[in-house]
Length: 309
Image 1 (cartoon, rainbow, N blue to C red):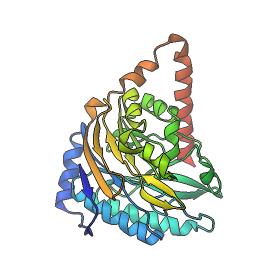
Image 2 (image 1 turned 90 degrees about the vertical axis):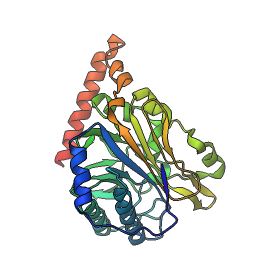
Image 3 (image 1 turned 120 degrees about the vertical axis):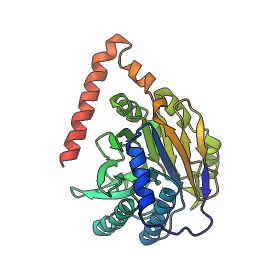
Image 4 (image 1 turned 180 degrees about the horizontal axis):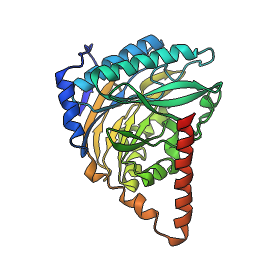
């Protein structure tokens, strides 16, 4: 299911309707309404944030429990990051958090983050109360990333309304271990914010859903939610759009086009996300059992270290 964003959307206030939807979900973890936003970046942070807030209200009004935005949605991706002020990003993300709290919806949004004197390309996770419950920072950087960002050093593992989930960012689709290990830990959903930046020729090869995402969902038996930017990015570069939500059996439940800003939605039946193949891989072949066990222990320890910083 997709909503075309060709008209102005009006925010709605949190109220009885959203409280009832929240209470219904809290009594039934088996179903989750997820939305993925396919958007074009605006020229300024202010314009991006205003559009993000519009879409949070609109998607939640239509029943979304979780909303995923693209990589660097707050600032835009193809920009000069030098000179970026940490305070301006914190204020912008604070506005996104307030929108999540007002509408009682989980929101995942891409944004640069600053800590220990370094910038990171991150995905921020806000729960229904507007609390920042997780921050994942991109580990495998592109050449463009590396000009400004430092690499993260921890896999993503967090819970939304009690559901274990994970995330990767853009280029990291090429590193299957970033998904397999969190799925072994219990993740049932992969969230993947993206900001496509390719030649038109390469961009076309990613269209119509043929990009390996369905394979990643199938080989782990989990849901996969992919939110991309769309359209020309300047200097002959493009973003293919093609945002999608994929089921554990590789069926595409929702697919955006390659031209328009859209919000796609799907209901995830979490009883179908049994992680069968990831679980079986921990047991066979026998000679790898201890290696998998040690890797999972290391992942959990690193997550704990990240949490206390």
